[in-house]
Image 1 (cartoon, helix red, strand yellow):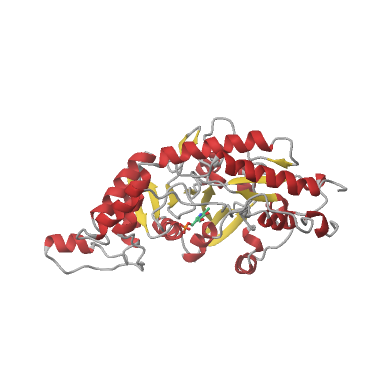
Image 2 (cartoon, helix red, strand yellow):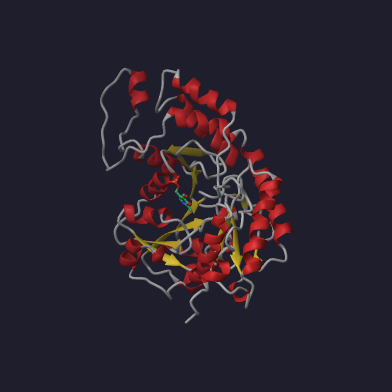
Length: 404
Ligand SMILES: Cc1ncc(COP(=O)(O)O)c(C=O)c1O
């Protein structure tokens, strides 16, 4: 048993002023005047939903990622649900999902009655470990959801080899990875389908939104139908043909993206490369300035070009006299908006019960969870902001040195 952390060492002395006056969030969207104008133009147009701006976003996104098709959804979570439907997964099927991810990566299997099966992750990248993927395979395994954690591409060469030899569908959960490149190609082109999130914390935003990329025309067609109640035609198609009849052969949802969201998404897509470059520059600053502190900075495997949705450090707890939670609180008191991504999926009540898993089952994800801290990272951050985060870490970790 680890000793209980000593809270007193991480607490600031009475009267101590925080490093920053204003709170620095861990993520923040960048919205410029032309983004605002794009949404206003959509509001004044004939189509507020299922209109031409949704088509335009899909075309531009497919071109950017390099796939034949892209299908827009109302959120990344809805888009993930679309992929498990499109792949015809259901009861009795197992879907392997990394233990260190947001719950939506596992939910998409459960939504269609399939069973998410967790696999442990690589200790440094926190991406799915191909050996652990192989360990979780059974005759019922039909698909794997591969997360590019923090925007760092997963090991698609080895994961792809396992998937091919076992006939698995590969769903890339690229919610963190817009604009990231692996040695094998761009994230979103490396499986049967790639899923992106357009939530404000991500590299580009539509307010809310999701998008699936694929080269497979049949999957694209199923993805399009599923987001619109599984109707065989869209309202716009019927309107244009002057027809009213449609049929519904399978259970679908209303997961449509509006043209207001699509307008923002199109405008933001034009800025994605600039936003990603800025993120890469900030990561370089952090890497340089955090060297020498008792923490490990994130790694990019050789040949990868991450797009850095998150900057996650791992505290070297063996060199510290207190735990992550106390350091988290102390940094918040310095007005640094640190966060934790993620609680391992099997620590969440619903999934613990569904999977019958608990502490000790995924040791690498669990050990990482004790150490991880997400530091603020977003394109509008300044060098001074980075310096304030580093200064706060020096101050807090300085109080928490081993034996300190
Ligand atoms: C790995 C991962 N997958 C899926 C999602 C879901 O995306 P959304 O918030 O757009 O539903 C998220 C959201 O943060 C995520 O981090």
